[in-house]
Figure 1: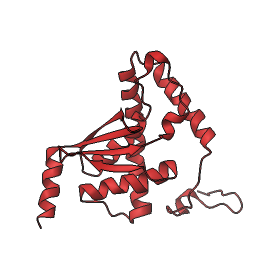
Figure 2: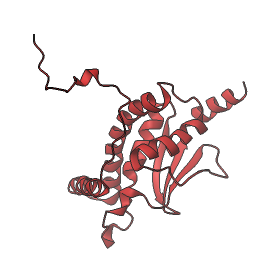
Figure 3: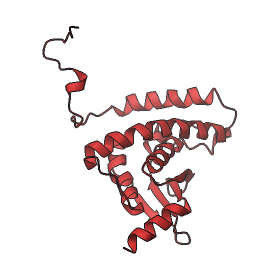
Length: 188
């Protein structure tokens, strides 16, 4: 069987995984994401359902993104501690998605299994016009889905919810087993 290649082009299987970074124009992203939101909105009946649908789409993206970033940024090594995986998300994941780090990473004062990733002006909310009747809509649920998938597929099961507080806040609530494992690792 003969394989045909165009002159000067290599097979996709022969290209390295660590290809140079490419950037997408913000206007193209804004248009595409607003179409995704409109598509989801036409298939749901409430703001809660819309945010759940965006989160579900984000989870699909996050599962694929994790594998690519671990290979490119970490040479295939995965994180084992809660703080390290959160810093990986704050720095590496945010930089690959939005071109910059997330604004803040905080731990809740009263709960050791709750963390907050704070973004003052989330790019996914920038180009979305929210009507008055949907004023609670936060399209960063898509980003929350990405973060939840990355955490879950990394072995840190968590529930990520999105809130309007100090801009957009992603509240990450880890399972009890994750915190217990993290404390056991610290005790070594």
